[in-house]
Image (tube, rainbow, N blue to C red; front, side, top):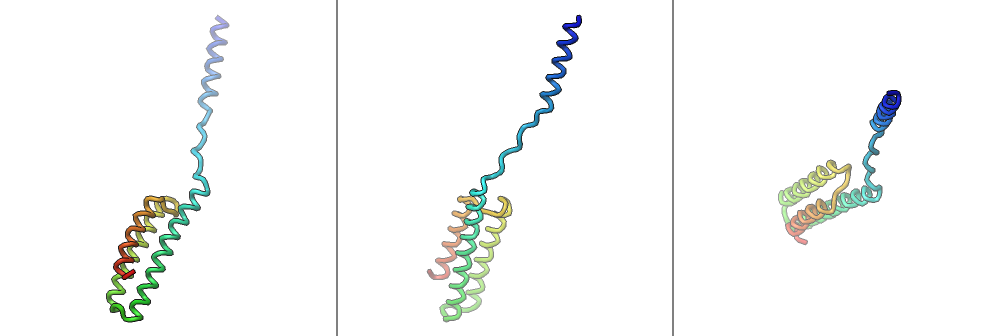
Length: 115
């Protein structure tokens, strides 16, 4: 009977220790991946800024009227906002697919600007 009680106490001790084991937290994203995601976002912003300067130059040189330039600036602002919204979902950066989509939109804007 004492063996049974000792065995039962041993099983209880082992099961209580097993319950204390906590799974390790998931690994944090690799810092390089986050930096790359930030670089992608900055590339999109930089390209939008370059297109914005081109719009200003075209309006100043009389290639198209200010209202058309304003519409093109608005289009770039929408793309920047989309980039910002996408980045907010991923800790401040963009995935490769998100950057590709935004670059396609910027390609359309560049074509409209007259690249």
